[in-house]
Every structure is written in C-alpha cells, then in structure tokens.
Length: 305
Image (tube, rainbow, N blue to C red; front, side):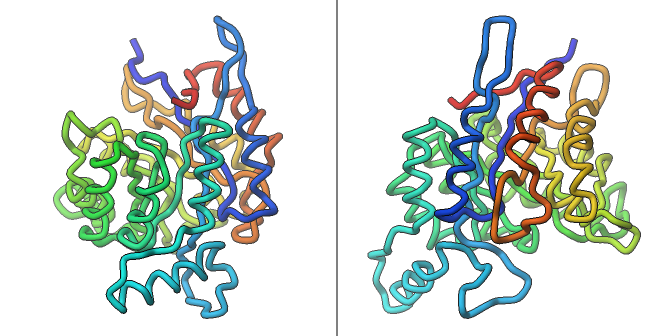
C-alpha cells in the first residue's frame, strides 16, 4: 500500500512584479475533479522579490523587485537601526494569502534582513522559504530554521549545484545536502512535516541540454537519510533548451517510486507564467492546468491549508 500519495504543487514566476502577479491569481483558480467533487489543485505560489544572480548588478536590473528596499534596510542595519522598511514582495504575499489562501514561497538571500520583516506581516503556516543553490553554508540555513520553527513555516533546501566524488557511499553533494538538513534543527518529529528537500539538478560537464542534470538516485538517498519530503524542480533542471519537456518530465517524476510503498517525490516547485528573469524556462498557466489534471489521476493534490 502506497503511503505518501499526497502531492504538493507550488507554482509561479521566477520573480514577482506588478505585471505578472495576475498569473498567480489564475494559478490559484486551477481545480481538479475528485471523487467528492472539484477542489483547488495548487498548494502554494512562488512570490520571489530578491534574486540570487551570478553577477551583482548595482543598478538592480534582474535583482528583483525588493532590491531597492533591501539596500535601504542594509544601510539601516549597518547604522544600528532595526526599523526596516517592508519589501514590495511581502506586501504582495500578504494580499495573495488573504485573497487566495495559498501558501507563499520565496527564495531567501539574507535570512535576517528578509525574514525579520516577513515575520511581522505574514501568518504562521502560510510561508515556505528556501536557500539559493549557490549558498550551501550551514549557518544561514540555521537562522532560517530558527524562524521556520518559531512561525511553523516550511523550509526548503535546494541541493548544491556541484556533484563531486563518492566518499563512503555518498557524493559530496549528498553529504552537504544532508548536513544542511541537520543545521535546520527540523529533523525532529515536532517539525519534520515542515521540511522539504528541493532537487534542482547538478551542473556537470555531462549534462547535455539540461540546464542542470537530474540525479534522482542521489536525491532518493538524501530523502531516505533525512526523512524529509522531496520536491522536484523541473524548471532549473530542464531550463530553456528542454522547456518543452517540462510537463512530461514532471508527470514522470510524480510516478517515480522509492520502493513498492513510497513515491520518490512529494511535490513540485515549478516556474509558471511570465517573468523578467529566467523567462524561457517557464511553462504557461494552461500547461500547469494540464499538468495538475494529469497528476491528480494518480496522486492526491494538496489544497491550500
């Protein structure tokens, strides 16, 4: 008997702005048919206001809608003030939660400067935050874990971009990913339901047309080791070159099994709609609707809490 049929869909643009926020409201209205009637298909929405970019752009272009306020808050912190301004994405997230009841999910670059503001304006159990794949240090993740445990928020851990050599049955990627999970303080029966691993692939020479190569077996080993739930990130795995394969690959991932009783993936974090960043790896809202209909035939899609 399969025990983890529940499947969490978290979808939305790579970065939020005032032009694409309407896509989130369309996403929130997607419904699927069940034995007891129709229900909402999407659990959460991506509402990302500050972006991790390979190269810093002092003009703020491509850095996200929160860039200007972040700069102001950083200067306040350095001068000794904790009277931070509210980020635009936090204002948007608050309204989205109120209007749709969706969970809001966002990438966090600076745990203190971002989460201290979010904590004042966003409710408990309605937020998921995750670390950038380029940041694999335990201490920032520990801070994120403290906020998440305090507010009963969900915490996502993206795997490192590198893969590395196998050391005592683990690659260096797996060892780091497992280590981050322990830093969160959420490998604990009181909090483990709030912890998600996020598989976004690895950047290796042999990746071919993938933006990042999927390593499902490594993700499986980390899930089994930590006991955390696992999300599939097809957008950063397939990227622009394989964008047209994202829907099919996500359905296939939702069918993957660890063994006869357990699915590998517990959900998906996927880029949908329009965005000024990573535009070419987004699927459309209509494609997301199709994806939801297909997965709902064999998995139980989780509605907003």
